[in-house]
Length: 54
Image 1 (cartoon, rainbow, N blue to C red):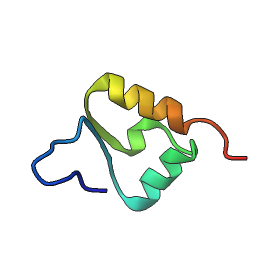
Image 2 (image 1 turned 180 degrees about the vertical axis):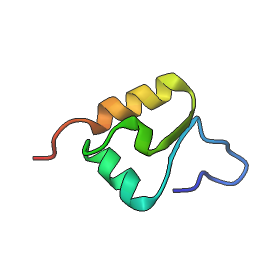
Image 3 (image 1 turned 90 degrees about the horizontal axis):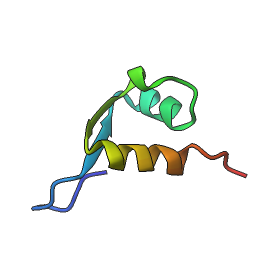
Image 4 (image 1 turned 30 degrees about the vertical axis):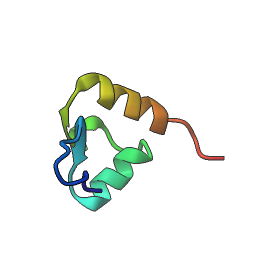
C-alpha cells in the first residue's frame, strides 16, 4: 500500500512479499522484515494483526 500523495506514513513494514506475508501470519520473526517509523504505531499494528483469523 502507498500513502496518499502529500501524506507521510506514520510507520512502514517492508520486505520481500513472501517475508511480509510470513511475518503477518506470525510464521517468522521481526528480523524478516524492515520496520521504520513510530514505534507505538508499529506496536499497535502488530497487536491488531497478531490475533488468529477465525
